[in-house]
Length: 100
Image (cartoon, rainbow, N blue to C red; front, side, top):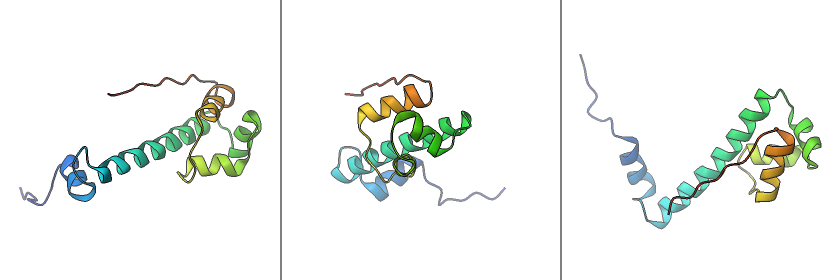
């Protein structure tokens, strides 16, 4: 069996491309990734509920464009809006945790 010696771990990839944990560049990457992740989670939940972006926007009192920007990581989202999307739009509950 042939092995590829160029394979590296994901942590090594992040260290090489975004800096080690604790550096400013790695922190920026981690923050942007969390924003991206929230957008993906909202999009997946919306699709599971068989809602269009317009239908979700109507439920929470915002625009289709804003929902699209959130799902595509092009917009920061206020906590109050995130809570409305999850509770009123998707019928769920928001749970937060902190790593300090």
